[in-house]
Amino acid sequence: MPSYGAVAAKAQTILVVGDSLSAEYGLQRGSGWVALMSERISREHPGAVVVNASISGDTTAGGLARLPALLRQHRPSLVVLELGGNDALRGLPIDTTQNNLAETARLAKAAGARVLILGMQLPPNYGRSYGERFAALFAEVARSQGTALVPFMLKGVADIPEAEAMFQADRIHPVASAHPIILGNVWPVLEPLLR
Image 1: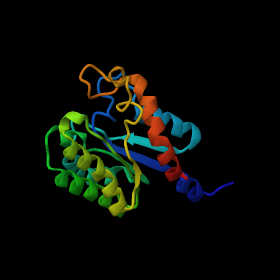
Image 2: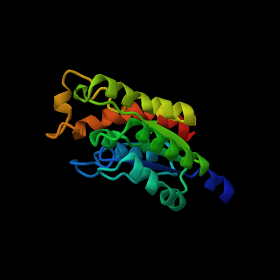
Image 3: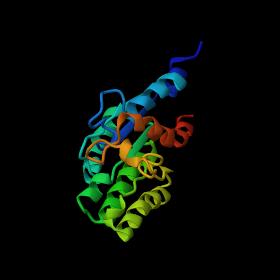
Image 4: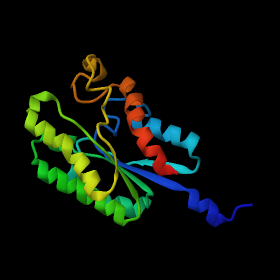
């Protein structure tokens, strides 16, 4: 019979700190990629718990401000950072976004958590230079902080010819049927971090 310590050692908390893409904006509760991930984790990694601390409209600055309290409250073994899209929508400087995301990753690591960063890309109307620099910042933060990375969480959703059908009327938030694809992008990178 395993000791209590052995059982406790296997328990994991996965903390998702994100924006509307992770907060099920415009979706029926339970149909977003984080809820789908939670269901899969409960099947394949019993004892692990997912805490979705995502807030619609959040920026990297907001996530950074909220993180210390979340780390104290939940003591996660893995932190998934899905932030940055709202920074771009507000035209914030890329250096600011990058610095905020790097500091958020650093704080999570300092608290003993592994970190997974979910990268984002912008539509072409933001301009090629800004778009390329924005897409690159996620890989740069992952490299500098030694974290795992999903280069583009909306791969197969936003970069396909039928992309318009994959989004709600605002053309920003994916429809429910796109969320299994998002999880398909995240899972192969996230799952090894749970072992």
